Image (tube, rainbow, N blue to C red; front, side):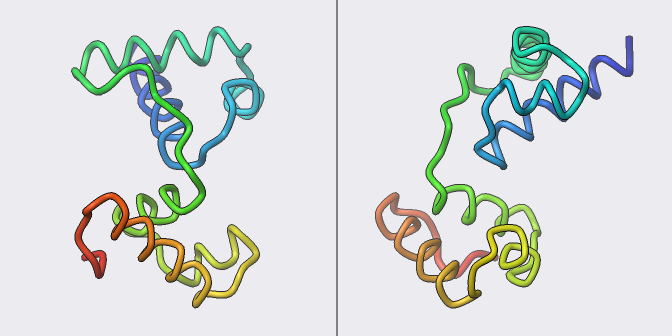
Length: 104
């Protein structure tokens, strides 16, 4: 049971951080689309996190990943883009959403 709770949290975070579809998330963990969604939903209910999760913009994903500790270099490799471009996208997202900048 504990493994399913951890998997639900992992699936929830994958959707939140990576902007992936439920199909891709399920495939990456060996589950069906509905199985992945169900486990993530159960995790959200147990932990009282927001549900349903919307797919965020690329800039929002960059901002969120950076906020959770991913380095600019890691993001650059992940998105195959220059650091300056990623910083600009995250900055504009933060400004648009009224979020703090620079990200701490």
